[in-house]
Image (cartoon, rainbow, N blue to C red):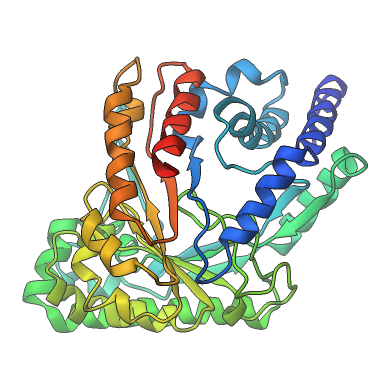
Length: 407
């Protein structure tokens, strides 16, 4: 690693601070609360996390001291949970180790997504396909690989840099499979919708091929012993953790049945529940059945596909309740089940107004508390792109959420 002596000193000081925060009574208590939250079928206090990734540019620069590019990447990664823990005081944990994650690569149909930036936060995917009858010859076999050499080198480098202060640990986060997102990355959404209507047979064939490729990919990871089980604070996507008592934690060479899978299908939000059940869900269910536990959903409204699809998934343990979801409907369905009501509040409350609109925030969380009564409730605030450089605003938002949800 190309890191100057001064940057090494800064990173080692930061590692010491991380170790101290990880060992603090508050972090230890929070760890026990998350472990309790992961017990299947047992309702605990609502857990609240703020995903800093989308607005870290307004928080981390003032905390950073390193000069070199590589050192700053490491510093930013270490600072993110510390910022949550110290500035926002949400339920984000400070890890007692430096995590080196798996380096996995999966390229659907061998077609890397091509993006065109729009000058702001938006972007456009440049399609390969428009009409399946004319273009399906472009769909090759999916490509996948595991970079064990790169991960081992990163682990060795970080152990040399920080290992005497902060343990360095290999971890596997939850695996991810979002087939409809893969398709939209290579085919415009309107063309995908038209294919579902006008060329159902070829659309089925495309979904079948992609599902088979994911199965081959996951089987390769399993048979090669590349994965570790995750049942503690590993990343589960959508701002949440892998905590559960139904799977072993940190088991090397873990089988798929001891792992979490994350899936969503935001791209089919405009598809009827009946069409989703016919053209999409059979393939999703097949992938879900190979894993121990499943977390489902991003910004799509899951209530429309609950009764005829998601409710039939026995190993489903978390479901997204986005701003477009019928909170009351899902609260009624999830009462007394083992499925966590994973609420994603509207990003506008925290991200739009410079001063926090406390009345609106209270009303939002009061509604969630009412809808989710009798459910295992977790809040993951995502997709906030600005906080007007005011971390105190985020801390106050978390405080209001706690007051209303625990009232």
